[in-house]
Length: 346
Length: 290
Image (cartoon, rainbow over all chains, first blue to last red; front, side, top):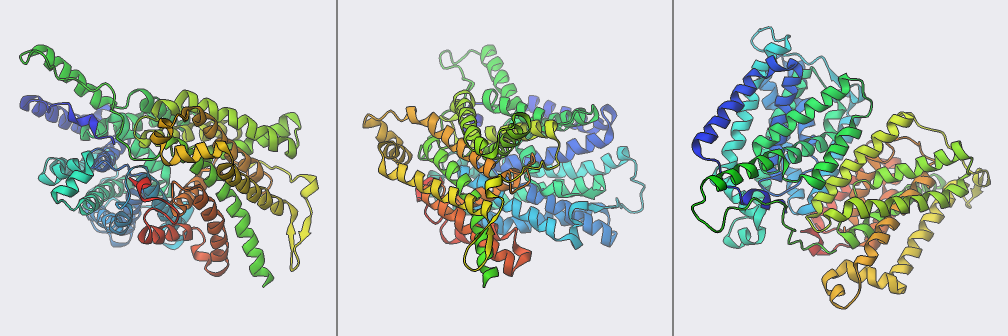
């Protein structure tokens, strides 16, 4: 499916990668100085959410359109733990992530039996079920009023200033991103890529494809939950919006805009979408979906490799020009994803 | 007893909407391999079309019933020609994403214009009363909706199974390459079939206007329920989708009667059960899943 976007680009050289990593870390640390701190926190949590979704979409080849279920479940769980137990907020966030992972086991079990577009529809439907459960379980979730007054407890420190809270929450996001980076570059991650590129062959080699997909699904859900729990703590409330399908769609939008199969691209996409929505809502524009939807349609039509993917292509082209040693077959940057060898009936 | 029967009827009426929408989705998927996320938004557009025609031009319900589906057919043709077509050679996921973006655009465009509150739409005078159905009286309009839906689904079934066009569409659905190799111009039928599916969504929207709230988000939750219906029926199967539409409507109404707590989640629980038992759906073919 979306597999071909990665294959042709070689990884950047080691110094370049270190430089990128250092820049990214510096940016993450400097963010609340550059922009309004609550927005900086939103960018950080959405970046983790989008990157976690990309573990499935970009590295396993499964488009989940129901990740709001995990983000939202974790948001409610973290909120409830923080309200009722008074434990430090990272514990509440971890609790949310754990429940999201537990929820992902049965849902994932049912979903990974399907692939492609079927997978997207089934995940979407199950997420809607979670939405209705959250809507009806008023005693626990507060129904349409949402869960309000979630405290930010951390050993009695004063975290009420969003600027301070950003630095309290950032380690969780960085931990999540580090986990993703480790997963993607582990032998397990390589098996996922093999499954994405050719599930039949991976199966034939002897990998239990469905079990790998399920594990990827659960890991992705757990890390989405980490992001969702932190989001709820940082906002002080969790609402039905968190479990609604537009939230799943927003995360997918971020991944595609940043570049499918590029973890850093997801973070970039998250930053852009959050900034755009913040700009639109503060400027009083009514109808954010009109703009984000149009942008998304254009990206899908004309710019499917995404920002990071495009940057990679440019970098590869520059490298090819600079080192023309293997004279003839210059590394080609894929201008267009190849048509899928689809088995779907047309 | 009459309460039970009345609930059954309610279920079949809401099943009518599921069936009409699932039918459009299934036909489009079969012909183009596209799952149209915007189907719910187009249904909403159909309802708003009827509302706008009534308020701005005084066109009554019966006029809207003809004009709106025709207009949406054109909308569908334009969409297919300008946007969908560019992505059909790629993985179907891309068109899913494209139509998701379109959904956001359509919903928010209408929301900007009319706000989120529901607009009133009167029942046509001819159908304002109720009909006696033996044991109980039932609103005439609901009976009309059910009849229209059943007749339309039957008509589509006849067209698909008894005419040359239907034969081409079925062949192109099942074995597109082979159909082309036999000299059938499959591409010629793609655009009208997409337009037809969208017109069905528009028709469902017009039918919904007098009995459901006309608001920009009326299709947002419905489309996901219809996805579940299509998954239950089997994504490739037109017959399965329609049957599942009516059956799910019925089961939901009965669930509402006996286990009200489950009324909204029941459809997804059924879907989970079907996925466990037959991952390709009740009438689906295995190869449609990959």
